[in-house]
Amino acid sequence: MKTIIEPFRIKSVEPIYFNTVEERKLILENAFYNPFLIRSKDVLIDLLTDSGTSAMSSSQWAGIMHGDESYAGSPSFFRFEETIQEITGMPLVIPTHQGRASEKILFSILGGKGKYFLSNTLFDTTRANIEFSGAEGIDLICEEGKHPAIPAPFKGNMDLVALKQIIKEKGAENIPLCIITVTNNSGGGQPVSMQNIRAVRTICSENNIPVFIDACRFAENSYFIKLREEGYNNKPVFEIARELFSYADGCTMSAKKDAFANIGGFLAMRNEELALKCRNLLVITEGFPTYGGLAGRDLEAIAIGLREVMEENYLQYRIRSIEYLANKLIAAGVPIMQPAGGHAVYLDAKKFLAHIPVAQYPGQALVGALYLHGGIRSVEIGSLMFGKYDDNKQLIPAQLELVRLAIPRRVYTQSHIDYVAEVVIEVFNARDKIKGLSIVEEAAVLRHFTAKLQQL
Ligand SMILES: *Cc1c(COP(=O)(O)O)cnc(C)c1O
Image 1 (tube, helix red, strand yellow):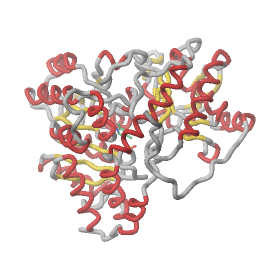
Image 2 (cartoon, rainbow, N blue to C red):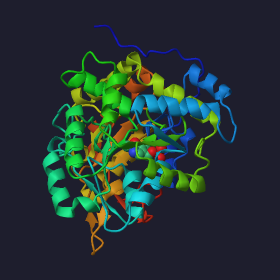
Image 3 (cartoon, helix red, strand yellow):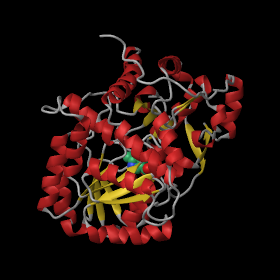
Image 4 (cartoon, rainbow, N blue to C red):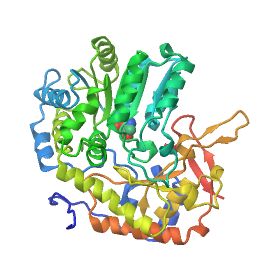
């Protein structure tokens, strides 16, 4: 088989600014070992997130010029609405400025003290919005999903036995929603199978619990279903996505992921009463229902992006380019989550830095080392992001200590990725020298964004 090439040409470029290890040492110290506090011009390869960092296509940029900025009833909104209705089959579409705005609205309405939200794994902002409402989020990832080193086709699946048990234990009346995150961002970008989604739907229907999809990476998940699940090999991704959404009562979406947009999001659903409540909140917090928190031009870019993301040449390249990086690391013995996810490669920091105890945040230490050595910015998805304290102020660690190398869509070429592999492997070979970290300052929620740390 020939090399799978990037299915695009480059029309506009942005420079990368180079710096030295000595300069980066100072930058890292001044940023308190927190990649969110580093300026992007000081980063060579930015793998902090795939969110809002995609390269838009020439069609999307053309759409930006077509955007109609009318306050109410803009044709751009109707193109946005129609596209989402077509893909999701959900009639009620509510634009928001990004994913978490959808979450804030949804959980303000459905959340509250004594409520439980069940999920394969809640993303950090989703969990934060649930907890902010006073409710509790419960992750029920399948057993395969808990073991980074063991490959399995659908490690994002929900544990169905645990789901039934928790419903019995907490009472269906206290569970306003079950949320399936596709792909499972916090759990390694791993896909959820159609069979699992269908089974969750059945269990939830028996208990009168609505199902929502956290749809940020619906196209990547649909492509994995096409590749890995029996009966889907010959189906177009659009049809697979349609089926996936058909099992849900609604969805939340960040258009900064699988819509190639730099900003945007939406809520879509089937229930009129819930949509009415959402729109009432939307007007207070985001804007009028035909623009949400967005400009008309953003609505256009999203509508176009949502169609482009389902093109199979793109998805083949996308999934393959992540796998390409993963394979290079596996060949060098670097411990990573296997198989490769849809949007990122996840380093297993617990194994990578076995000499650093979990309470010294090995993931964050690794993030620092990758930046220092090669100017690569990544993010910890472990105990800094998800850790809690018990009553004695002792850390209750997260299930996994991962470092995510998120690959922006259509942004980096194969030689950029080759460079990333070289840096990770060099850091791995000198891992004994990396030291743990302690927290100097932190916020009560989403602490990883602003926490200040120091080297031990
Ligand atoms: C990014 C993301 C969100 C939140 O979306 P924002 O646009 O960043 O607010 C929610 N869920 C998942 C799975 C995500 O990846």
